[in-house]
Length: 396
Ligand SMILES: *Cc1c(COP(=O)(O)O)cnc(C)c1O
Image (cartoon, rainbow, N blue to C red; front, side):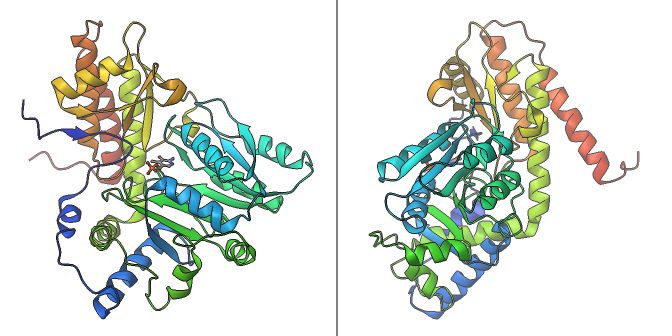
């Protein structure tokens, strides 16, 4: 087998398009010079369009988790209370991080595989605890379960209560619709290595005027990840410290690709990838973790392994025999599900290939599968979408 040719179907890191990868090799520049100003302005304008915000979008070194910590330390004062809405492993990580940083953390735990319910959030916030909840921590797309939470409705409830709305959109932003300003989101953060198609290493974060006011009042200690110098230098493209230039070159290139496709076209492509994946999985007789399609993620799908076959065996066979890299289950799901990532630099044909690998793996493990069913179901969804986009081509 040609080992270097494989298909990466992870929910992060995701495949990096060649122009994005190559851009990193450009010569370094003076980050206090004019060329940097042009680079910075192009990136921040592109990010504001992807975040759907007029607020500054800050680019920091780190991964998504670094964004959690930075958001908390800047926008919530030490010891204050936050409510973490936990729908899976990433929500759980954010809650644990907040606790580790000394915040008082209340949790609203939702069964893994289900979406958070705005009514339940309203009840919890109204329960009138002794201390005010300063922020509600939300996960837009829970990557561990493949659930997309109804962020717009959850955010509205949190705002009615006067809490800051902080959203982890690490596996959402760029792939799934999100409207930071219109939906009243106070903090939105993501990482570069998911739908933004870059190598890992950047955290991207934007905050509302309300959040910045909270930051200015916050007496908590911060230094390298104090966001105020980033905000204050934003208009002049002046950063407090040396930026990760090679990654910024990559990000500029990926934002150009998003611009060329069109953000809404990218959302539609992900919707198609999600629908194709779910159709294919069902056609081969496997069960999806998320039962309610209204909340099924269009960037990652969690699939239950069939009885008698472990998800790790399916993944190993898919990788070693079919050259397709799938993700495992996280935490309590590690023995029951595997995940297919379909976000970023992914096209419908990749989904067909991934489904064929899963189906082939089941067959190699001796399960009774009818070869081609998954691909046929996915292709039918694909063809419907193509027919909707344009009339059928002529016969000749
Ligand atoms: C990937 C991811 C993160 C961040 O993980 P890092 O490994 O720190 O980049 C956070 N939240 C969600 C929902 C994610 O998918």
